Image (cartoon, rainbow, N blue to C red):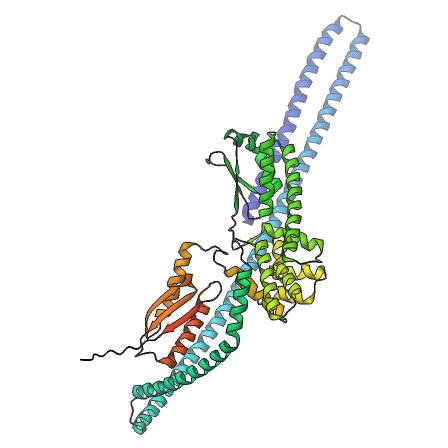
Length: 537
């Protein structure tokens, strides 16, 4: 490598020197040509001087000698200048070549050090792996020896036990398991039956009465929301005007509203797509105003979007005031009322959150009245329990924590804060009102039609329910009824007795809770029937 660079340096210097000496030679040739011209001039002047006097001839000779002398001096100066320039150029090239050689040598040294370090690291790792492998082999060998020793001791003990008990290993295992199963089934069935019966006797009648009364008093319609809106057009030519030249109108509208405009082959209609219903409503109102006005350009679009925003804000305020009046909740901060109104444009599992909050508030009021609890506080907690969902698009975190923080900001009662925080079991409920909000929230969400469920997932849920029930030994038939809210199980009376029925029902309930997702609760009914037939002759 170093030899190659040296050769290259010499060649470069030689080429540069050759060029410079060529330039000098050229200058010398020019000087010779100039000298020849001067000689010719002198000869001509001599001829002219023959006709002139002797003094004129001497002057001409002196002038000619002076010209020749000046020309020689000029040529000598140019030659010296060219030599100096050539030496400077050679020195410059030599310096650059030496610098490049130093840099290349430094880079090679660094690479050699890196390779050497990597080789050292690899050697260390290889040594460590070899030591670990040797240690592991020793441990494996020791473990195999201990296992053999334990197996031999176990076999000896088993032979002694078989001689003493006069049972083989399998026979002893079956005998012990059967005795334990019988005893455990009996004891567990008796205890579960006693506890359940005691709890049912105390709470079932009152709970049914209160919940049925609350549901009957608060009957509300359930409407499924969507994520798109359709705006009708007077004609298909309006689509081109909405798109605008090079798409400037549709880009302006999408940028200002944050909504996707879908313009397809659907005749006389445009689809607005956005999961934020507030934005979608603003875009719908603005687009309808633009279509009615007929003037569609970016400036007009901005004006109409501003007007639509003001209309939607006014509507949000009206919806919040309507909810407060309808639920008879007073003394709320005006900012909380606005947030309640925003819930009109928020859905959860396609259930309108404002309608859900109003229904929960009414259910809480009815249940609190029946239990002798503060009904006003219960209605207030029910109305505010999902207030955090109005801000989930703007603030990170769960709607429970957001709702608690917002209500703290506006100095709501600690009872309300606990009810909001506990309605999804994030914390332990500390008051009866918090428990009522949990119950009312579950009732509202479990209404038929409250939350959408497609047909395929519904069928799969029923099949999974029946599959769990039929997997138990002794189950003859199983039927999921009441839209999957109840399951009836026919058992074989010779396999499952009355005491074991309680245990099987509890096991099925636990497996359903751990393996399935479902709204509300599922009732499990086990049916055991014994028939005896005879004939009188």
